[in-house]
Length: 453
Image (tube, rainbow, N blue to C red):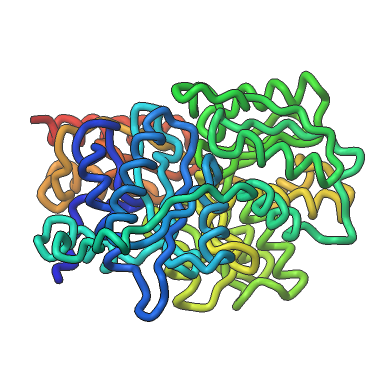
């Protein structure tokens, strides 16, 4: 089968709900193809389906389930649950696959589908391509189950409780969160119940915000992409830490007791340097993406470690970790993967790792976060009508080369297209922030012009 993918991007299939490809008919077909490709010979197939709180989640849940049971497989519904929770349920309940209905940090109008294999890891690109091919193949229709073999759908009533227990199991048993005040921003998303519950059950006093989803307010001025409200609440309540999750809770952004944001790079630096000292960081290596700050590499070098970089996307971070035997990786955006505990980015588990360090060392997050000094970094996202390969844009390439010459060894330039949106991203790091801001705006402007229809 062809390995080219058209529907699946860097994080599953995504689009505007009720417009192709995110329509009920297409998603039903996807459910059929998932069941056909991932069923295991010699056993009855079962597939877990979970979702975030988007209004369209009900439509896609029904469509997926219909497609899966039509192929003779059974469906186990978790209801609203974080993406990592569905990965956990998939592997722990020995499902043949797990399907997440979520567009992560996108607004409610969007939705998406991502698929986990039976081991709880996201499907590799070639398997996604095979599923795409099956969707448009007449071969799929010939595999429908006989009337007596159609599958069934049922709810896993205790899915939330199972995941809460799992999250708490990643926190050191000799520690508690007694005496800590924690602000938890649920982004009106999938973790609106489980997020506050985990920290509260470990002993923290929890101030929960943005935990009243109505189907349309997911990520709306809330959560990891909009941490300002969390920061203000931390200061108002004199809390020790703020924890902002995104819509499907696979990423997290923190803030310290002063309301200062602590992003994924800082969390990785904090956790990785401790793991080096404790001889728990595999091969003394952290896996990050090309977007992570140069200050992260410096912090790792000072502790005798190193950073290996991948393309953007937590799936590529995990692929590198599994391929090379590393156990910690992540993204500046807050996707943080602790492979000793989870198979994918988990915002709650990541926050618990930081809280464990705070509790063990009895130090505030503001002090702990000083383990990394950021190199000034500018990131500009610019809308594009089409994604023309950069090697076909000579004027843009000349501008990039000119800036790289001026930066020398004190910075870098990264220009790429988003894998999930019609945007180009221009990132520049360097000593002079105002200077790199101007250069980034010039490159972004030329990109927008060149990619205009």
